[in-house]
Length: 162
Image 1: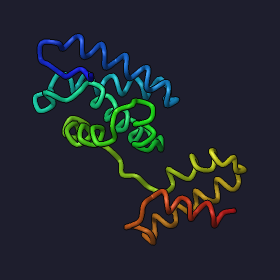
Image 2 (image 1 turned 120 degrees about the vertical axis):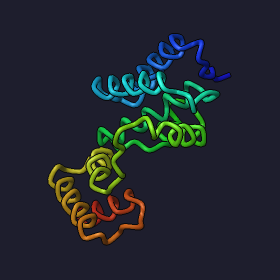
Image 3 (image 1 turned 180 degrees about the vertical axis):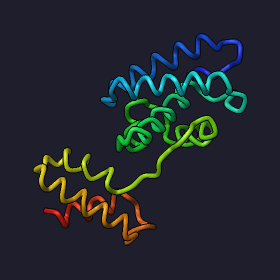
Image 4 (image 1 turned 120 degrees about the horizontal axis):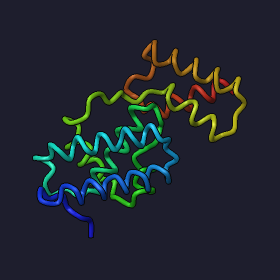
């Protein structure tokens, strides 16, 4: 059963949260800077957690990892985080909504961020990756696919570049 945040267990939940950030961050291949940022944000949220009482440490940590990946331009989907953390996607989304007020800036998702990741996964040459990034940037700039999923726009850019 997931441990719940309780005001009397501050140091225990902080220790557990830091351990989970290290464990899950490593399984998602996050770098040290991202892990440190996640730990700082967890400590900040831990200190002002009035509206988080009753939420599991696991769901809050998973949501923080999602926030940090967005802030650091690491295109990881919530489902990837769900797979690594074994926290239900609904819990992650609920915790994400709850911690938004504690987090400074969460950049919006956009197609150029996804192009490089997709190109790497597809093992496409560097020139194709650069061309896809430029196409995705143009799509974003000219607002052709504003209401569409940014992964779709990235896929379109990669298709056009190949």
